Length: 632
Image 1 (tube, rainbow, N blue to C red):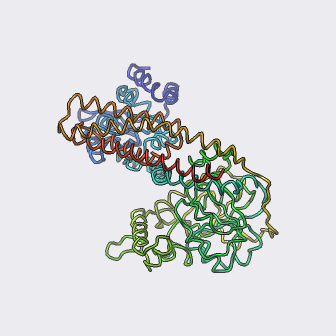
Image 2: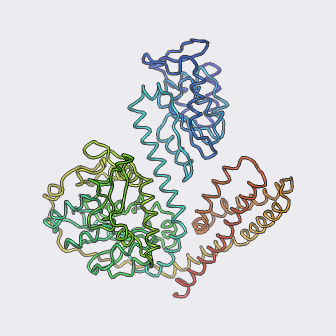
Protein backbone atom coordinates (compact mmCIF):
# COMPACT_ATOMS: atom_id res chain seq x y z
CA UNK A 1 0.00 0.00 0.00
CA UNK A 2 1.65 3.28 -1.11
CA UNK A 3 1.62 6.50 0.94
CA UNK A 4 -0.90 8.28 -1.31
CA UNK A 5 -3.38 5.39 -1.08
CA UNK A 6 -2.87 5.21 2.69
CA UNK A 7 -3.59 8.96 3.13
CA UNK A 8 -6.78 8.68 1.08
CA UNK A 9 -7.96 5.63 3.02
CA UNK A 10 -7.31 7.32 6.41
CA UNK A 11 -9.41 10.32 5.28
CA UNK A 12 -12.12 8.09 3.81
CA UNK A 13 -12.41 6.09 7.05
CA UNK A 14 -13.69 9.26 8.71
CA UNK A 15 -16.32 9.95 6.03
CA UNK A 16 -17.24 6.47 4.72
CA UNK A 17 -15.57 3.66 6.71
CA UNK A 18 -17.42 0.90 4.83
CA UNK A 19 -16.06 2.06 1.47
CA UNK A 20 -12.58 2.51 2.99
CA UNK A 21 -12.63 -1.12 4.17
CA UNK A 22 -13.77 -2.34 0.74
CA UNK A 23 -10.95 -0.50 -1.00
CA UNK A 24 -8.33 -1.81 1.43
CA UNK A 25 -9.25 -5.41 0.66
CA UNK A 26 -10.09 -4.88 -3.02
CA UNK A 27 -8.17 -6.86 -5.65
CA UNK A 28 -8.32 -4.98 -8.98
CA UNK A 29 -9.30 -6.98 -12.07
CA UNK A 30 -10.08 -4.46 -14.83
CA UNK A 31 -7.85 -1.43 -14.25
CA UNK A 32 -7.59 1.42 -16.81
CA UNK A 33 -4.13 2.05 -18.25
CA UNK A 34 -2.24 5.15 -17.06
CA UNK A 35 -0.53 7.18 -19.82
CA UNK A 36 1.47 10.40 -19.89
CA UNK A 37 1.04 12.53 -23.00
CA UNK A 38 1.40 16.26 -23.69
CA UNK A 39 2.89 16.74 -20.22
CA UNK A 40 -0.28 15.51 -18.56
CA UNK A 41 -1.64 12.25 -17.18
CA UNK A 42 -4.60 10.40 -18.65
CA UNK A 43 -6.32 7.00 -18.53
CA UNK A 44 -7.20 4.65 -21.37
CA UNK A 45 -10.05 2.21 -20.84
CA UNK A 46 -11.59 -0.02 -23.51
CA UNK A 47 -9.47 1.81 -26.11
CA UNK A 48 -10.90 5.19 -25.11
CA UNK A 49 -9.23 8.13 -23.41
CA UNK A 50 -11.06 8.99 -20.21
CA UNK A 51 -9.98 12.64 -20.14
CA UNK A 52 -9.43 15.23 -22.85
CA UNK A 53 -6.13 14.41 -24.56
CA UNK A 54 -5.00 18.01 -24.79
CA UNK A 55 -6.00 19.44 -21.42
CA UNK A 56 -7.90 17.30 -18.86
CA UNK A 57 -7.89 20.18 -16.38
CA UNK A 58 -9.49 22.64 -18.81
CA UNK A 59 -12.09 20.02 -19.67
CA UNK A 60 -12.97 19.65 -15.97
CA UNK A 61 -13.14 23.43 -15.49
CA UNK A 62 -15.43 23.81 -18.49
CA UNK A 63 -17.81 21.07 -17.28
CA UNK A 64 -18.03 22.64 -13.83
CA UNK A 65 -18.48 26.17 -15.23
CA UNK A 66 -21.67 25.05 -16.99
CA UNK A 67 -23.30 24.11 -13.68
CA UNK A 68 -25.22 26.36 -11.29
CA UNK A 69 -23.06 27.07 -8.26
CA UNK A 70 -24.93 28.27 -5.16
CA UNK A 71 -24.98 27.21 -1.50
CA UNK A 72 -28.07 25.11 -2.29
CA UNK A 73 -26.48 23.37 -5.28
CA UNK A 74 -25.96 19.60 -5.23
CA UNK A 75 -23.12 18.58 -7.57
CA UNK A 76 -23.04 14.84 -8.21
CA UNK A 77 -19.79 13.87 -9.94
CA UNK A 78 -20.43 10.62 -11.80
CA UNK A 79 -17.15 8.71 -12.19
CA UNK A 80 -13.72 9.67 -10.90
CA UNK A 81 -11.22 8.97 -13.68
CA UNK A 82 -8.03 10.58 -12.39
CA UNK A 83 -10.06 13.03 -10.30
CA UNK A 84 -9.66 16.24 -12.35
CA UNK A 85 -13.41 16.97 -12.36
CA UNK A 86 -13.87 15.81 -8.77
CA UNK A 87 -11.12 18.11 -7.48
CA UNK A 88 -12.29 21.12 -9.50
CA UNK A 89 -15.80 20.58 -8.10
CA UNK A 90 -14.50 20.05 -4.56
CA UNK A 91 -12.47 23.27 -4.70
CA UNK A 92 -15.18 25.48 -6.23
CA UNK A 93 -18.58 24.14 -5.17
CA UNK A 94 -20.51 26.38 -2.80
CA UNK A 95 -22.98 23.57 -2.16
CA UNK A 96 -22.77 19.81 -1.71
CA UNK A 97 -20.42 17.51 -3.65
CA UNK A 98 -21.23 13.82 -4.05
CA UNK A 99 -18.70 11.64 -5.85
CA UNK A 100 -20.33 8.46 -7.13
CA UNK A 101 -17.98 5.89 -8.62
CA UNK A 102 -19.59 2.44 -8.88
CA UNK A 103 -16.47 0.83 -10.38
CA UNK A 104 -13.96 0.05 -7.62
CA UNK A 105 -11.24 -0.50 -10.24
CA UNK A 106 -11.34 3.22 -11.08
CA UNK A 107 -11.58 4.25 -7.44
CA UNK A 108 -8.70 1.99 -6.39
CA UNK A 109 -6.44 3.26 -9.19
CA UNK A 110 -7.14 6.97 -8.66
CA UNK A 111 -6.70 6.61 -4.89
CA UNK A 112 -3.31 5.01 -5.57
CA UNK A 113 -2.15 7.85 -7.85
CA UNK A 114 -3.70 11.11 -6.57
CA UNK A 115 -3.86 12.61 -3.06
CA UNK A 116 -7.55 13.38 -2.45
CA UNK A 117 -7.28 13.45 1.35
CA UNK A 118 -8.04 17.18 1.71
CA UNK A 119 -11.00 16.92 -0.68
CA UNK A 120 -12.38 13.85 1.11
CA UNK A 121 -12.30 15.58 4.52
CA UNK A 122 -14.25 18.64 3.38
CA UNK A 123 -17.56 18.94 5.20
CA UNK A 124 -19.55 19.31 1.98
CA UNK A 125 -18.00 16.26 0.23
CA UNK A 126 -19.31 12.68 0.26
CA UNK A 127 -17.83 9.70 -1.65
CA UNK A 128 -19.53 6.40 -2.36
CA UNK A 129 -19.62 3.45 -4.75
CA UNK A 130 -23.15 2.52 -3.69
CA UNK A 131 -26.20 3.94 -5.45
CA UNK A 132 -28.33 3.62 -2.31
CA UNK A 133 -25.83 5.66 -0.29
CA UNK A 134 -25.58 8.24 -3.08
CA UNK A 135 -29.38 8.43 -3.24
CA UNK A 136 -29.61 8.87 0.53
CA UNK A 137 -27.02 11.66 0.42
CA UNK A 138 -29.02 13.40 -2.32
CA UNK A 139 -32.24 12.92 -0.36
CA UNK A 140 -30.75 14.46 2.79
CA UNK A 141 -29.52 17.53 0.93
CA UNK A 142 -32.47 18.06 -1.40
CA UNK A 143 -35.08 20.76 -0.89
CA UNK A 144 -37.71 22.69 -2.82
CA UNK A 145 -35.10 25.21 -3.99
CA UNK A 146 -32.04 22.98 -4.36
CA UNK A 147 -30.49 22.56 -7.78
CA UNK A 148 -29.38 19.00 -8.45
CA UNK A 149 -26.79 18.65 -11.22
CA UNK A 150 -24.86 15.70 -12.61
CA UNK A 151 -21.30 16.37 -13.73
CA UNK A 152 -19.53 13.71 -15.77
CA UNK A 153 -16.93 13.29 -18.47
CA UNK A 154 -18.24 12.62 -22.01
CA UNK A 155 -16.09 9.47 -22.17
CA UNK A 156 -17.60 8.03 -18.97
CA UNK A 157 -21.14 8.75 -20.18
CA UNK A 158 -20.30 6.90 -23.41
CA UNK A 159 -18.50 3.94 -21.84
CA UNK A 160 -21.06 3.46 -19.07
CA UNK A 161 -24.06 4.55 -21.17
CA UNK A 162 -26.49 1.85 -20.03
CA UNK A 163 -25.60 2.08 -16.33
CA UNK A 164 -25.36 5.86 -16.53
CA UNK A 165 -28.89 6.23 -17.95
CA UNK A 166 -30.32 3.86 -15.34
CA UNK A 167 -28.50 5.50 -12.42
CA UNK A 168 -29.41 9.02 -13.50
CA UNK A 169 -33.07 8.05 -13.63
CA UNK A 170 -32.76 6.71 -10.08
CA UNK A 171 -31.20 9.96 -8.87
CA UNK A 172 -33.82 12.08 -10.61
CA UNK A 173 -36.59 10.03 -9.02
CA UNK A 174 -34.99 10.54 -5.60
CA UNK A 175 -34.85 14.30 -6.14
CA UNK A 176 -38.44 14.32 -7.38
CA UNK A 177 -39.66 12.24 -4.45
CA UNK A 178 -37.94 14.44 -1.90
CA UNK A 179 -39.23 17.59 -3.59
CA UNK A 180 -42.74 16.14 -3.28
CA UNK A 181 -42.18 15.29 0.39
CA UNK A 182 -40.78 18.74 1.15
CA UNK A 183 -43.51 20.45 -0.85
CA UNK A 184 -46.05 18.50 1.20
CA UNK A 185 -44.29 19.53 4.42
CA UNK A 186 -44.21 23.18 3.39
CA UNK A 187 -47.80 23.36 2.19
CA UNK A 188 -49.61 20.87 4.41
CA UNK A 189 -48.05 20.44 7.86
CA UNK A 190 -49.83 23.31 9.55
CA UNK A 191 -53.18 22.92 7.69
CA UNK A 192 -53.05 19.17 8.44
CA UNK A 193 -52.51 19.82 12.14
CA UNK A 194 -55.50 22.15 12.22
CA UNK A 195 -57.65 19.64 10.33
CA UNK A 196 -56.63 16.85 12.70
CA UNK A 197 -57.64 18.83 15.78
CA UNK A 198 -60.97 19.80 14.21
CA UNK A 199 -61.56 16.15 13.28
CA UNK A 200 -60.81 14.58 16.67
CA UNK A 201 -64.46 14.66 17.88
CA UNK A 202 -65.33 12.70 14.71
CA UNK A 203 -62.26 10.48 14.91
CA UNK A 204 -63.56 9.01 18.17
CA UNK A 205 -66.17 7.23 16.01
CA UNK A 206 -63.97 6.38 13.01
CA UNK A 207 -62.47 2.92 13.44
CA UNK A 208 -58.86 2.34 12.27
CA UNK A 209 -58.95 0.21 9.12
CA UNK A 210 -56.38 -2.26 10.46
CA UNK A 211 -58.99 -3.46 12.98
CA UNK A 212 -60.49 -5.31 9.98
CA UNK A 213 -57.24 -6.90 8.80
CA UNK A 214 -57.75 -9.84 6.39
CA UNK A 215 -61.53 -9.63 6.53
CA UNK A 216 -61.56 -10.12 2.73
CA UNK A 217 -58.80 -12.74 2.63
CA UNK A 218 -58.39 -14.24 -0.84
CA UNK A 219 -60.83 -11.82 -2.51
CA UNK A 220 -60.24 -9.66 -5.60
CA UNK A 221 -60.08 -5.88 -5.32
CA UNK A 222 -60.43 -3.34 -8.12
CA UNK A 223 -58.97 0.13 -7.58
CA UNK A 224 -60.59 2.72 -9.84
CA UNK A 225 -58.74 5.93 -10.68
CA UNK A 226 -59.79 8.73 -13.02
CA UNK A 227 -57.39 8.08 -15.92
CA UNK A 228 -58.70 8.11 -19.51
CA UNK A 229 -58.85 4.31 -19.80
CA UNK A 230 -61.50 4.15 -17.08
CA UNK A 231 -64.07 4.95 -19.78
CA UNK A 232 -62.93 1.94 -21.83
CA UNK A 233 -63.50 -0.42 -18.88
CA UNK A 234 -66.93 0.70 -17.70
CA UNK A 235 -68.89 -2.09 -19.40
CA UNK A 236 -66.50 -4.75 -18.09
CA UNK A 237 -66.85 -3.35 -14.56
CA UNK A 238 -70.63 -3.66 -14.90
CA UNK A 239 -70.41 -7.20 -16.29
CA UNK A 240 -68.27 -8.56 -13.44
CA UNK A 241 -69.43 -6.26 -10.64
CA UNK A 242 -70.28 -9.10 -8.25
CA UNK A 243 -66.75 -10.58 -8.46
CA UNK A 244 -64.67 -7.86 -6.81
CA UNK A 245 -64.55 -5.37 -3.98
CA UNK A 246 -64.57 -1.93 -5.56
CA UNK A 247 -62.41 0.88 -4.22
CA UNK A 248 -62.58 4.27 -5.93
CA UNK A 249 -60.71 7.54 -5.52
CA UNK A 250 -62.68 10.76 -5.26
CA UNK A 251 -61.96 12.04 -8.78
CA UNK A 252 -63.41 8.86 -10.34
CA UNK A 253 -66.53 8.35 -8.24
CA UNK A 254 -68.86 10.46 -10.39
CA UNK A 255 -67.87 8.47 -13.48
CA UNK A 256 -68.94 5.28 -11.67
CA UNK A 257 -72.23 6.76 -10.44
CA UNK A 258 -73.07 8.13 -13.88
CA UNK A 259 -72.73 4.58 -15.18
CA UNK A 260 -74.80 3.12 -12.30
CA UNK A 261 -71.82 1.45 -10.63
CA UNK A 262 -71.73 1.84 -6.85
CA UNK A 263 -68.36 1.40 -5.10
CA UNK A 264 -67.89 -0.47 -1.84
CA UNK A 265 -65.20 1.93 -0.62
CA UNK A 266 -64.51 5.59 -1.39
CA UNK A 267 -61.00 6.94 -0.62
CA UNK A 268 -60.30 10.68 -0.28
CA UNK A 269 -57.34 12.00 1.72
CA UNK A 270 -56.91 15.69 0.81
CA UNK A 271 -56.62 18.52 3.33
CA UNK A 272 -58.30 20.97 0.94
CA UNK A 273 -62.09 20.97 0.56
CA UNK A 274 -62.62 18.40 -2.21
CA UNK A 275 -66.30 17.82 -1.39
CA UNK A 276 -67.20 18.85 -4.96
CA UNK A 277 -65.97 15.39 -5.99
CA UNK A 278 -68.89 13.70 -4.20
CA UNK A 279 -71.49 16.46 -4.09
CA UNK A 280 -74.98 15.23 -5.02
CA UNK A 281 -74.16 11.52 -4.70
CA UNK A 282 -76.05 9.03 -2.54
CA UNK A 283 -73.24 7.57 -0.39
CA UNK A 284 -75.25 6.02 2.45
CA UNK A 285 -74.31 2.48 1.33
CA UNK A 286 -70.63 3.30 0.74
CA UNK A 287 -67.79 2.90 3.24
CA UNK A 288 -65.59 5.99 3.39
CA UNK A 289 -61.83 5.66 4.02
CA UNK A 290 -59.93 8.83 4.83
CA UNK A 291 -56.98 10.20 6.76
CA UNK A 292 -57.28 11.68 10.27
CA UNK A 293 -56.08 15.03 8.86
CA UNK A 294 -58.38 15.10 5.78
CA UNK A 295 -60.66 18.12 5.35
CA UNK A 296 -63.59 18.09 7.84
CA UNK A 297 -66.05 18.97 5.05
CA UNK A 298 -65.64 15.43 3.71
CA UNK A 299 -67.13 14.07 6.93
CA UNK A 300 -70.40 15.99 6.48
CA UNK A 301 -71.81 13.48 3.97
CA UNK A 302 -73.80 10.45 5.04
CA UNK A 303 -71.75 7.24 4.57
CA UNK A 304 -72.36 3.70 5.67
CA UNK A 305 -69.37 4.12 7.98
CA UNK A 306 -66.05 6.00 8.08
CA UNK A 307 -62.68 4.29 8.60
CA UNK A 308 -59.27 5.84 9.31
CA UNK A 309 -56.21 5.06 7.22
CA UNK A 310 -53.48 6.47 9.52
CA UNK A 311 -50.56 6.77 7.08
CA UNK A 312 -47.41 5.73 8.95
CA UNK A 313 -44.92 7.89 7.04
CA UNK A 314 -46.93 11.06 7.66
CA UNK A 315 -45.70 13.05 10.66
CA UNK A 316 -49.17 14.35 11.53
CA UNK A 317 -50.43 10.76 11.70
CA UNK A 318 -47.45 9.70 13.80
CA UNK A 319 -48.47 12.48 16.19
CA UNK A 320 -52.07 11.20 16.21
CA UNK A 321 -50.91 7.59 16.63
CA UNK A 322 -48.94 8.58 19.75
CA UNK A 323 -51.91 10.48 21.18
CA UNK A 324 -54.51 7.78 20.54
CA UNK A 325 -52.18 4.85 21.29
CA UNK A 326 -52.63 3.10 17.92
CA UNK A 327 -49.92 1.14 16.10
CA UNK A 328 -49.88 2.61 12.60
CA UNK A 329 -47.18 0.45 10.92
CA UNK A 330 -49.71 -1.17 8.56
CA UNK A 331 -50.65 2.10 6.92
CA UNK A 332 -48.31 2.70 3.98
CA UNK A 333 -48.76 5.72 1.75
CA UNK A 334 -46.87 7.84 -0.75
CA UNK A 335 -49.00 10.93 -1.26
CA UNK A 336 -51.31 9.52 -3.93
CA UNK A 337 -54.79 8.35 -3.00
CA UNK A 338 -54.65 5.36 -5.38
CA UNK A 339 -51.58 4.11 -3.46
CA UNK A 340 -53.63 4.47 -0.26
CA UNK A 341 -56.49 2.50 -1.84
CA UNK A 342 -54.08 -0.30 -2.84
CA UNK A 343 -52.80 -0.45 0.72
CA UNK A 344 -56.36 -0.57 2.06
CA UNK A 345 -57.15 -3.54 -0.17
CA UNK A 346 -53.99 -5.33 1.03
CA UNK A 347 -54.74 -4.65 4.72
CA UNK A 348 -58.24 -6.06 4.25
CA UNK A 349 -56.71 -9.27 2.84
CA UNK A 350 -57.34 -9.05 -0.91
CA UNK A 351 -54.98 -11.42 -2.76
CA UNK A 352 -55.48 -9.89 -6.22
CA UNK A 353 -55.44 -6.11 -6.70
CA UNK A 354 -56.43 -4.75 -10.11
CA UNK A 355 -55.88 -1.16 -11.22
CA UNK A 356 -58.38 0.52 -13.55
CA UNK A 357 -57.80 4.01 -14.95
CA UNK A 358 -54.33 4.16 -13.35
CA UNK A 359 -52.76 5.47 -16.55
CA UNK A 360 -50.37 7.96 -14.93
CA UNK A 361 -50.14 9.56 -18.38
CA UNK A 362 -52.14 11.62 -20.85
CA UNK A 363 -53.70 9.23 -23.36
CA UNK A 364 -54.84 10.35 -26.84
CA UNK A 365 -54.92 13.96 -25.68
CA UNK A 366 -57.14 13.08 -22.73
CA UNK A 367 -55.98 13.73 -19.16
CA UNK A 368 -58.82 12.16 -17.21
CA UNK A 369 -61.98 10.13 -17.58
CA UNK A 370 -64.75 12.02 -19.44
CA UNK A 371 -67.01 12.09 -16.38
CA UNK A 372 -64.36 12.81 -13.74
CA UNK A 373 -63.84 16.08 -11.87
CA UNK A 374 -61.02 16.97 -14.31
CA UNK A 375 -62.85 15.91 -17.48
CA UNK A 376 -62.35 19.32 -19.14
CA UNK A 377 -58.56 18.95 -19.33
CA UNK A 378 -56.80 17.92 -22.53
CA UNK A 379 -53.15 17.39 -23.42
CA UNK A 380 -52.43 18.69 -26.93
CA UNK A 381 -49.36 19.47 -29.00
CA UNK A 382 -49.06 23.22 -29.66
CA UNK A 383 -48.60 23.66 -33.42
CA UNK A 384 -46.49 26.79 -32.98
CA UNK A 385 -44.10 25.51 -30.31
CA UNK A 386 -44.30 21.78 -31.16
CA UNK A 387 -44.57 21.16 -27.42
CA UNK A 388 -47.22 19.33 -25.44
CA UNK A 389 -49.41 21.50 -23.21
CA UNK A 390 -52.47 21.07 -21.00
CA UNK A 391 -55.55 23.17 -21.63
CA UNK A 392 -59.09 23.33 -20.22
CA UNK A 393 -61.59 22.73 -23.03
CA UNK A 394 -64.26 24.42 -20.91
CA UNK A 395 -62.43 26.67 -18.46
CA UNK A 396 -65.46 27.71 -16.40
CA UNK A 397 -66.62 24.13 -16.00
CA UNK A 398 -63.11 23.08 -14.97
CA UNK A 399 -62.92 25.91 -12.42
CA UNK A 400 -66.28 24.96 -10.94
CA UNK A 401 -65.32 21.29 -10.70
CA UNK A 402 -62.11 21.77 -8.71
CA UNK A 403 -62.92 24.70 -6.45
CA UNK A 404 -65.64 25.23 -3.87
CA UNK A 405 -64.90 28.99 -3.64
CA UNK A 406 -67.94 31.25 -3.49
CA UNK A 407 -67.15 33.46 -6.54
CA UNK A 408 -66.23 32.67 -10.14
CA UNK A 409 -63.21 34.98 -9.81
CA UNK A 410 -61.80 32.93 -6.94
CA UNK A 411 -62.55 29.66 -8.72
CA UNK A 412 -60.89 30.97 -11.88
CA UNK A 413 -57.74 31.86 -9.95
CA UNK A 414 -57.57 28.33 -8.53
CA UNK A 415 -58.07 26.83 -12.00
CA UNK A 416 -55.46 29.10 -13.61
CA UNK A 417 -52.88 28.21 -10.97
CA UNK A 418 -53.68 24.53 -11.43
CA UNK A 419 -53.15 24.77 -15.22
CA UNK A 420 -49.88 26.66 -14.73
CA UNK A 421 -48.60 23.99 -12.34
CA UNK A 422 -49.67 21.19 -14.69
CA UNK A 423 -47.86 22.73 -17.65
CA UNK A 424 -44.71 23.44 -15.68
CA UNK A 425 -44.75 19.84 -14.52
CA UNK A 426 -45.14 18.13 -17.92
CA UNK A 427 -42.94 15.07 -18.05
CA UNK A 428 -42.39 11.93 -20.13
CA UNK A 429 -42.39 8.32 -18.95
CA UNK A 430 -41.99 4.91 -20.52
CA UNK A 431 -45.34 3.55 -21.65
CA UNK A 432 -46.59 -0.03 -21.49
CA UNK A 433 -45.89 -0.31 -25.22
CA UNK A 434 -42.30 0.93 -24.77
CA UNK A 435 -42.78 4.45 -26.15
CA UNK A 436 -42.28 7.69 -24.22
CA UNK A 437 -45.60 9.33 -23.35
CA UNK A 438 -46.50 12.73 -21.78
CA UNK A 439 -47.53 12.95 -18.16
CA UNK A 440 -47.27 15.21 -15.13
CA UNK A 441 -43.99 15.04 -13.17
CA UNK A 442 -45.98 14.30 -10.00
CA UNK A 443 -47.52 11.24 -11.69
CA UNK A 444 -44.09 10.19 -12.91
CA UNK A 445 -42.91 10.38 -9.29
CA UNK A 446 -45.79 8.08 -8.26
CA UNK A 447 -44.49 5.22 -10.43
CA UNK A 448 -41.37 4.22 -8.40
CA UNK A 449 -43.34 3.96 -5.09
CA UNK A 450 -45.88 1.66 -6.77
CA UNK A 451 -43.05 -0.48 -8.11
CA UNK A 452 -41.44 -0.66 -4.65
CA UNK A 453 -44.79 -1.49 -3.05
CA UNK A 454 -45.37 -4.44 -5.40
CA UNK A 455 -41.85 -5.70 -4.68
CA UNK A 456 -42.26 -5.43 -0.90
CA UNK A 457 -45.75 -6.96 -0.60
CA UNK A 458 -45.11 -9.59 -3.25
CA UNK A 459 -47.55 -12.14 -1.82
CA UNK A 460 -50.33 -10.20 -3.59
CA UNK A 461 -50.94 -10.40 -7.35
CA UNK A 462 -50.97 -6.94 -8.94
CA UNK A 463 -52.55 -6.23 -12.33
CA UNK A 464 -52.68 -3.00 -14.34
CA UNK A 465 -55.43 -2.84 -16.98
CA UNK A 466 -54.44 0.46 -18.59
CA UNK A 467 -52.65 -1.27 -21.53
CA UNK A 468 -51.62 2.11 -23.05
CA UNK A 469 -50.54 4.11 -19.98
CA UNK A 470 -47.29 4.27 -18.02
CA UNK A 471 -45.37 1.06 -17.36
CA UNK A 472 -45.49 0.05 -13.68
CA UNK A 473 -43.00 -2.77 -13.06
CA UNK A 474 -44.31 -5.43 -10.71
CA UNK A 475 -47.84 -5.06 -12.12
CA UNK A 476 -48.88 -7.50 -14.81
CA UNK A 477 -50.40 -5.74 -17.83
CA UNK A 478 -53.70 -7.41 -18.67
CA UNK A 479 -57.15 -6.42 -20.02
CA UNK A 480 -59.77 -6.14 -17.28
CA UNK A 481 -62.05 -8.90 -18.57
CA UNK A 482 -59.18 -11.42 -18.53
CA UNK A 483 -58.04 -10.22 -15.07
CA UNK A 484 -61.53 -10.84 -13.63
CA UNK A 485 -62.47 -14.11 -15.34
CA UNK A 486 -61.27 -16.42 -12.56
CA UNK A 487 -62.51 -14.22 -9.68
CA UNK A 488 -65.35 -15.62 -7.57
CA UNK A 489 -68.49 -13.74 -6.44
CA UNK A 490 -67.86 -11.70 -3.29
CA UNK A 491 -71.17 -11.98 -1.47
CA UNK A 492 -72.33 -9.64 1.27
CA UNK A 493 -69.80 -7.20 2.76
CA UNK A 494 -69.99 -6.54 6.51
CA UNK A 495 -67.48 -4.47 8.48
CA UNK A 496 -68.13 -5.08 12.19
CA UNK A 497 -65.83 -4.32 15.13
CA UNK A 498 -66.41 -3.41 18.78
CA UNK A 499 -63.28 -1.20 18.87
CA UNK A 500 -63.54 2.10 20.79
CA UNK A 501 -60.98 4.83 21.46
CA UNK A 502 -60.21 5.89 25.03
CA UNK A 503 -61.44 9.49 24.75
CA UNK A 504 -60.26 10.57 28.17
CA UNK A 505 -56.73 9.35 27.51
CA UNK A 506 -56.65 11.10 24.11
CA UNK A 507 -57.77 14.38 25.68
CA UNK A 508 -55.19 14.05 28.45
CA UNK A 509 -52.38 13.32 25.97
CA UNK A 510 -53.36 16.18 23.66
CA UNK A 511 -53.44 18.71 26.50
CA UNK A 512 -49.98 17.58 27.59
CA UNK A 513 -48.79 18.25 24.03
CA UNK A 514 -50.39 21.68 24.23
CA UNK A 515 -48.49 22.45 27.44
CA UNK A 516 -45.24 21.50 25.68
CA UNK A 517 -46.12 23.84 22.82
CA UNK A 518 -46.97 26.79 25.03
CA UNK A 519 -43.59 26.41 26.73
CA UNK A 520 -41.87 28.05 23.74
CA UNK A 521 -43.75 31.38 23.94
CA UNK A 522 -41.13 32.87 26.25
CA UNK A 523 -38.33 32.06 23.75
CA UNK A 524 -40.46 33.43 20.89
CA UNK A 525 -41.02 36.71 22.75
CA UNK A 526 -37.28 36.99 23.35
CA UNK A 527 -36.60 36.37 19.64
CA UNK A 528 -39.19 38.96 18.62
CA UNK A 529 -37.44 41.57 20.78
CA UNK A 530 -34.01 40.63 19.40
CA UNK A 531 -35.27 40.95 15.82
CA UNK A 532 -37.17 44.20 16.45
CA UNK A 533 -34.21 45.90 18.15
CA UNK A 534 -31.77 44.76 15.49
CA UNK A 535 -34.02 45.98 12.66
CA UNK A 536 -34.37 49.37 14.37
CA UNK A 537 -30.61 49.68 14.90
CA UNK A 538 -29.69 48.71 11.32
CA UNK A 539 -32.25 51.14 9.86
CA UNK A 540 -30.81 53.88 12.05
CA UNK A 541 -27.12 53.07 11.67
CA UNK A 542 -27.06 51.88 8.01
CA UNK A 543 -23.72 50.13 8.61
CA UNK A 544 -22.55 46.87 10.19
CA UNK A 545 -20.22 46.95 13.18
CA UNK A 546 -19.15 44.51 15.90
CA UNK A 547 -22.20 45.38 18.01
CA UNK A 548 -24.59 44.55 15.14
CA UNK A 549 -22.85 41.23 14.52
CA UNK A 550 -23.01 40.40 18.24
CA UNK A 551 -26.77 41.05 18.29
CA UNK A 552 -27.19 39.01 15.10
CA UNK A 553 -25.41 36.13 16.83
CA UNK A 554 -27.80 36.35 19.80
CA UNK A 555 -30.76 36.35 17.41
CA UNK A 556 -29.34 33.36 15.53
CA UNK A 557 -28.79 31.42 18.75
CA UNK A 558 -32.37 32.10 19.78
CA UNK A 559 -33.61 30.87 16.39
CA UNK A 560 -31.50 27.72 16.63
CA UNK A 561 -32.85 27.00 20.11
CA UNK A 562 -36.36 27.11 18.69
CA UNK A 563 -35.90 25.59 15.25
CA UNK A 564 -33.60 22.75 16.29
CA UNK A 565 -33.86 22.09 20.00
CA UNK A 566 -37.48 23.00 20.75
CA UNK A 567 -38.90 21.50 17.55
CA UNK A 568 -37.55 18.14 18.75
CA UNK A 569 -39.36 18.56 22.07
CA UNK A 570 -42.70 19.58 20.56
CA UNK A 571 -44.04 17.99 17.36
CA UNK A 572 -46.77 20.60 17.17
CA UNK A 573 -44.19 23.40 17.16
CA UNK A 574 -42.42 21.66 14.27
CA UNK A 575 -45.69 21.42 12.30
CA UNK A 576 -46.49 25.06 12.99
CA UNK A 577 -43.13 26.47 11.88
CA UNK A 578 -42.09 24.01 9.12
CA UNK A 579 -43.09 26.15 6.12
CA UNK A 580 -41.35 29.29 7.41
CA UNK A 581 -38.29 27.29 8.50
CA UNK A 582 -37.81 25.82 5.01
CA UNK A 583 -37.79 29.32 3.47
CA UNK A 584 -35.66 30.79 6.24
CA UNK A 585 -33.03 28.04 6.14
CA UNK A 586 -32.70 28.59 2.39
CA UNK A 587 -32.23 32.35 2.83
CA UNK A 588 -29.63 31.81 5.54
CA UNK A 589 -27.70 29.39 3.36
CA UNK A 590 -27.68 31.93 0.53
CA UNK A 591 -26.04 34.72 2.57
CA UNK A 592 -22.48 35.32 1.43
CA UNK A 593 -21.78 38.80 2.78
CA UNK A 594 -23.10 40.22 6.05
CA UNK A 595 -24.04 43.62 4.67
CA UNK A 596 -26.66 45.83 6.31
CA UNK A 597 -29.05 44.96 3.49
CA UNK A 598 -28.56 41.19 3.88
CA UNK A 599 -28.81 41.29 7.69
CA UNK A 600 -31.97 43.39 7.47
CA UNK A 601 -33.49 40.89 5.04
CA UNK A 602 -32.78 37.98 7.38
CA UNK A 603 -34.05 39.91 10.41
CA UNK A 604 -37.35 40.58 8.66
CA UNK A 605 -37.65 36.88 7.78
CA UNK A 606 -36.89 35.93 11.39
CA UNK A 607 -39.40 38.46 12.64
CA UNK A 608 -42.06 36.86 10.41
CA UNK A 609 -41.03 33.42 11.69
CA UNK A 610 -41.57 34.49 15.32
CA UNK A 611 -44.79 36.41 14.67
CA UNK A 612 -46.36 33.62 12.61
CA UNK A 613 -45.34 31.05 15.24
CA UNK A 614 -47.01 33.08 18.01
CA UNK A 615 -50.22 33.57 16.00
CA UNK A 616 -50.41 29.89 15.05
CA UNK A 617 -49.71 28.65 18.58
CA UNK A 618 -52.61 30.73 19.87
CA UNK A 619 -54.79 29.44 17.04
CA UNK A 620 -53.96 25.81 17.91
CA UNK A 621 -54.65 26.53 21.59
CA UNK A 622 -58.04 27.95 20.60
CA UNK A 623 -58.88 24.96 18.40
CA UNK A 624 -58.03 22.46 21.15
CA UNK A 625 -60.09 24.36 23.70
CA UNK A 626 -63.00 24.70 21.26
CA UNK A 627 -63.02 21.19 19.78
CA UNK A 628 -61.68 19.06 22.63
CA UNK A 629 -61.80 20.70 26.05
CA UNK A 630 -65.23 22.32 25.64
CA UNK A 631 -66.72 18.95 24.62
CA UNK A 632 -65.04 16.80 27.27
